[in-house]
Length: 375
Image (cartoon, rainbow, N blue to C red):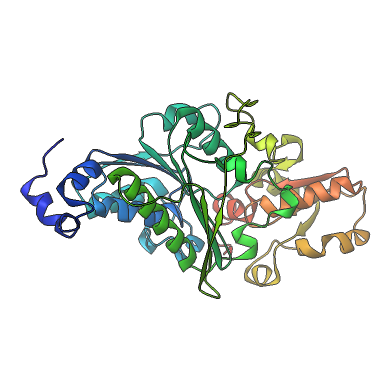
């Protein structure tokens, strides 16, 4: 093993004094590589503590930019980072924290075409993603590559964490064989999240990664940790490998990466999307469509498009009778997620001329009206 330098011995002294870690364990961390999917509420704190602990190589995968709404929980960023690439700013923070750690930014959207190549060089993967297509993608790729997948998720006051280790326990599909219908999945944007919750879960993920790479303790393989911060309760559920699992079971049916957007019922349809520029052109032409804003009341109060109709997503079904099926309708929300579900509901109800504002009002603010504040 690579010997620790005198400076590293001083830096990691509190680890070296732990009999379970010691110099050998710290050398194992130094030789380890961890890839973190998502540089947000989960990935940010995990990355900070892994860098501080002396993991030799850390990679961050994210293609977003820092927004003001991120700062409530994504403490790896500051106000001076607004508008900049998340991975670039996070990498700068990690380099400033520990110059002995090699950090690699991967400013790409993970997909079926690049996942195997991106994940292959790393010893272990931390899944800090916030959507089901990416979770299933990361799961399948790590199973195929035989790499541990340290999973975490958060919503409102609650969190979950476990470790999926191919060959030694269940995978994500054993726990969740099928994704929930998109209309039944509120995002953190809709449901909210207490800012500290992703920090708690992200640090649990970092802890599991450190234990796995140092070869110490008992991991969360086969155990799902449930966290309720409102009651400050920690519970544990035993989870087992499903012999009928389509990916890791005895007769696997899924043997290569698939279309995960389609699998999760979130396949984008270009015919129902409209870009902010195209919508602006419609306003300018005098043929403005009906704008339906499905955000919550407090978001609407911050800002909204002129002449938009406010119908929160939870009230859409009962409000449909007030809309005309032959009108051209554009549905908007903050990022395009809720409005996409609203479009699907309207189409199912017979509205044929309905489209979703691509990227939502956040994109409208970036591309059309920078003065618009979007909550």
